[in-house]
Image (cartoon, rainbow, N blue to C red; front, side):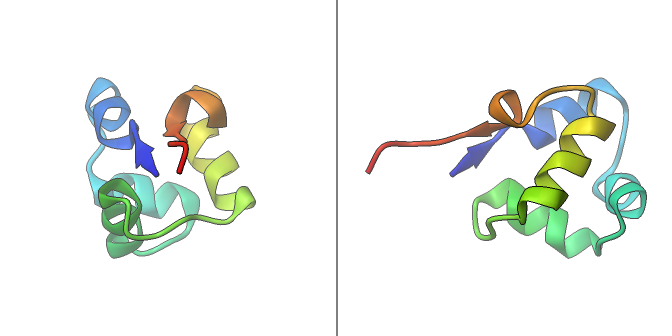
Length: 65
């Protein structure tokens, strides 16, 4: 799964650390999500989308297998 987190973080001038603190996770969690190495819970996806002022559908790009 690909994400637009990095792109949207840049729009709001947020570092991985800034976003991680706002949603209550470690910076590494944000890094792993951005790289597609970790699928977040629905709650975490919702929290990230809310901080980045977007929707979950716009934040995550689901690829057909």
